[in-house]
Amino acid sequence: MEVPNPSARGPKPESSGFGTLVVGAVLVGGAFLAIKAYQARQTPAAEPTLKAEVALARPDPLPGGPKKEEEAGPVDSLEMVKRSQDYSGVAVRGPMANSRPEPPLSYDGDTGPARAGTRLIRTKKEWDALWRETGGHDMPVVDWARYLGVAVFAGTRPAGSKIALTVGKPDRGRFEVRWKVAEPKSEEAGDARPFRVILVPKTHGTPTFKEAR
Image (cartoon, rainbow, N blue to C red; front, side, top):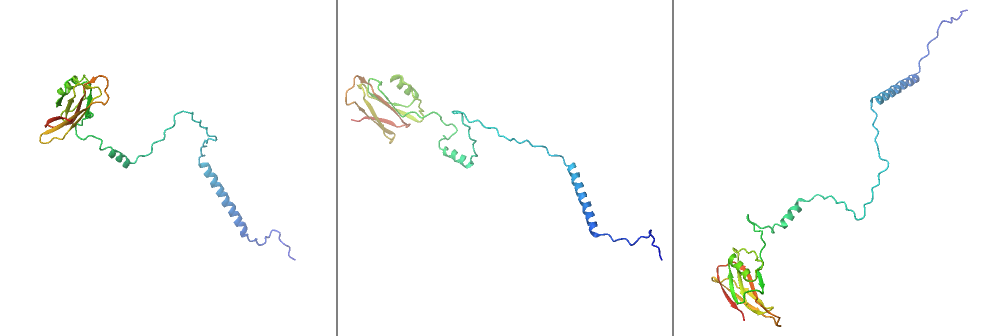
């Protein structure tokens, strides 16, 4: 009869495949957590941003206060060119543009000389003498290179009398000046010495004065 030997070992049991998978999953998960923890320690913490929780209320504008001007939008360059073209005909061409305004072309009054007559004015000297003779009025500035003056004096007439004066076009070196005195229908108190002066384009022709009846 054989006596069993307690020190003798039997055959080793085979290892299970499921247990191997569990152990591998645990090792992989631990390694993933360790990597995440390391990355968290290496990345600096983001600075906190301040955000206003409550917006400040804007005060209402005071009544009658100035209004905020709106910002000017972009201007189309074509529109600017058109505006400049609209005013192109206003500018005076030439290097020496005369900025002096054109004088009135007709003057009249009731303080002329007592004697009736006519006069042709071609120079500033004659023009100044006319205005001194008719009462010292302010003498209009005239460019005598462009104009000549034609004056008619009606002498002493009833107050309110007026002179009508027309000048014809030059023809063969001569031009005609016609004038007529219109007296008031109802007599006014006192007398007057009406005169009338007109400016016409300068010509070297000789005038012929005729009173219309």
